[in-house]
Image (cartoon, helix red, strand yellow):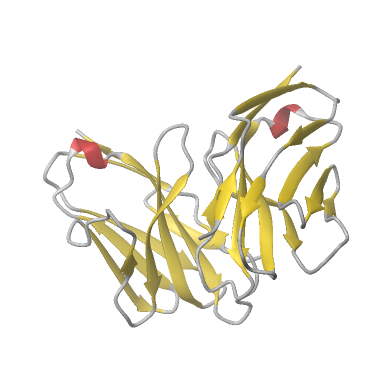
Length: 115
Length: 117
């Protein structure tokens, strides 16, 4: 069974600084997808970034980038130049290669950006 | 981009009432939709997987007679909380997978806040 672990329930970062959120997962599959979702106070689920397991290159989206270590089953999210609008819950998620099954979510990390 | 509309966004009703929540894919066809429940400060918990034209698959511990799911078309799934009680108060979120682009991320609705008095 797939599991996703986020070991940091809460984190804070000064505005304009960089923060890294950790995520590890467990699976026996070789091909899969990993995601980071952001859930602001409005509670919308917003896709931040996506990584295909077969790609060695780490995904980046503007200020957001990941450090994907497949052998270690680690998928951390780095937020550069943190902004007040980045304050939210962040969920790491896993899905198998077919996308046929549901997303497996981590327990989330609550990030607060301090002005 | 793909849009999923979830309605209503917030509902308050008396105990014993049945409440229906709709999840619509507006610009794509969704053979599969997922229903999640989220308690305050917790992660999303999958309740059931809904496939168009067939019975929903419920996760362990979720009462199918309590949470009725109907997925009658490729663009609409509904979740009905029957005879709701205060313990059913929660945030419910649906997501949908594009039938054609099935390897793309699921698209989430904006959620429904259900409060049972």
